[in-house]
Amino acid sequence: MLGNVFGLIYTGEENMQLRDLTNSRSVAAVPIGGRYRCIDFILSNLVNTGISNVGLIAQKNYHSLMDHLGSGKEWDLHRKRDGLFILPPFLSKENTGLYRGTVDAYRSVMGYVRRSPQRYVILTGSHTVFNTTFDDMLRQHINTGADITIMYNRVKNFNPDDQYDDMRLTLDDEGRVTDIEYNPYRPTSDCQACDVFVMEKELLEYLIEEAAARDSMDFIRDIVMKKFNTLKVYGWGYDGFVARINSLDCYYKHNMEMLKKNIREDLFCAEHPIYTKVKDEVPAVYGKNSKVKNSLIADGCSIEGEVEDSIIFRGVKIGEGTKIKGCIIMQACSIESGTELDHVILDKGVTVRQGRRLAGYDGFPVIIRKNSTI
Image (cartoon, rainbow, N blue to C red):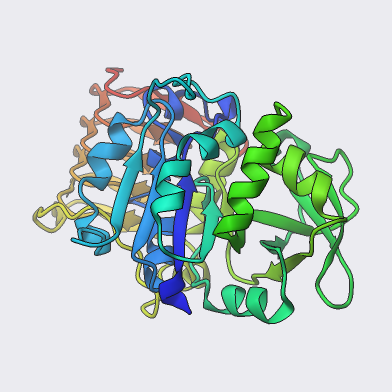
């Protein structure tokens, strides 16, 4: 069964609430968890399910993403048959090179979809982080005879400021979808879709061409929401950890949650490893006066100061006498001696000069743009 499925990932999500993090990269390429990118999780989920044919739809700011993915070797997608296919926008008679919505994006890669020999397709976005395999979801989809199966998890806390593609499902006792809300101000259901859909490839082709003929642009609004009464749409519940990278606050909160042991064990379980680009660097080096507490430290770092409740990416240098608390420090940053950072996000390659002090709050961390000098 699993050899009869391929994956199609849409990485063109646009969310200005991520601010400087997505100025020069797509959401899929946003660094997370000390050494990973958002795309690593959904790619690993597909590979751990046994899927070897994956298409990745790019739209803009995808240079960083392509550099990270390369040929797909780290995910075992460097193959003679199938493998990883990066599908950037292109200009043709039917394709303007600029997608007005997800329907446009899927229609532009119909050539790849039709060439794929598999019967079923898993459609996903790239801004939702979790660790699972789709075996049970595919099995349920086939056993129920569903046209579309949507993955969801139950969400208790709700913040309307963090909404982005917030689709809420109401289900009957058999798991069939009876109502859908999209970005509701006051959700009536705690079942929030995880941006993962399973369906037959032929049905996807039909739905996309039908929507395009009516100049419809959005897959969720114009297809799923309008047709859940006529199609058999089911939900598949997931009870593990789910992080939606919807805003800068969410990005900061979910990174900090990875400092909790139970979250790490769920997200980085040995049964379903998360793969990422390999960089051969030396282990982290700690100075004789350094102090590190409840933090994730990647390889290649040099720690001379104090670090607490923080996530430090590869190759970061922290000088003597520096105090860092509640921070996310991305790759190749240099923090000189005598510096104090509290609730700060430093993008890649930032230099903080000697004696500087930056402080934010839980709900409003300070973010410094890539390659800046403070």
